[in-house]
Picture: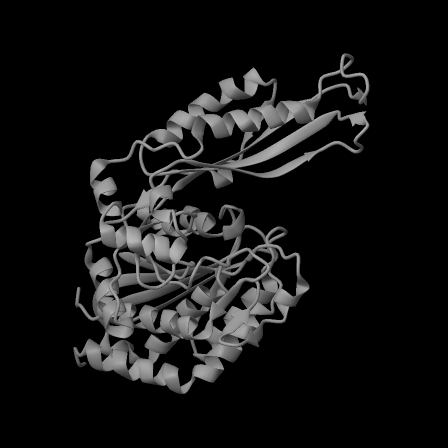
Length: 420
């Protein structure tokens, strides 16, 4: 065995460069698979993943609570005891309104496709990292586990949450890397919590010219939604001062605003409200019998999530609405030490590969890394830009996709180069 991680990293990065066209073609094939959630059927995507693992000669197993939402587990051991690194990614993607996204065509320097950002680029990088290191396991220590899951886009009940409820010992590990969209040149050590719920109003209905005869459910939910915005949207959260200090560092502010859009650094410190879906009514001249609004509130690390949740029943009652909390999509914020070992490894490799620093930044969306962080296990994200995810112009720049793969490989090599 040779303890020369720099040489192994260089060898693998040269290999990736030599197979660049193959990596791009493989990513296009992955992106063309319609694994939309909802409904969440990822069986074709799972077949694709198993095919890659088979070509690497890697054993794997498929587990899940639902046949149409499989989860793939695989693990290999180095010959000498060491740490346990887990790679995690999901196969499901957002719905589309433009079918051209399934073509996964190359347009200039980028691939335009659903899932190019969120998160098939990062998931494929994890699969290939896992496979590429396997032939060199005699130069490493410990073991590596790959988890490729379903259902992340709908809360993870049948994906990573299912794995922790049924296979926790196999997937906990000592550290987790995840390829969710993060952008390169930052250290994602923290992410907001979320509170997902609906408000429903009902009435007898009637003619629009007779408002004295019936309540209007649409008016009720609009008023309730406005009250939510007035009470919570962009209000400064009550966060631990040490976290505020990290997020207010000039380098962190600059990185967050550059990678996530101007204002992202300030957003990380605030509660946000989004009314994402309103349903109700059949005709402008009718008073509807029912209306519902679906709300997503993002809450920074701290006590505000419990406070807001505790206040919702009274607000719903004020507008005569029924409140239903989506428990699968409601969870606290999560974080990990930014200056822990994997954080320092990621920063060093970002500097070596890209020539830029990677200051700590807070994620504004949710990822499955929370399941590891809640258990005190360090978890970091190495993925492409998040700015186009979910849009009709979702894409990944090809150079960025290759850099995501290289960074995951380099960080994995460094982490597994220390004996237990």
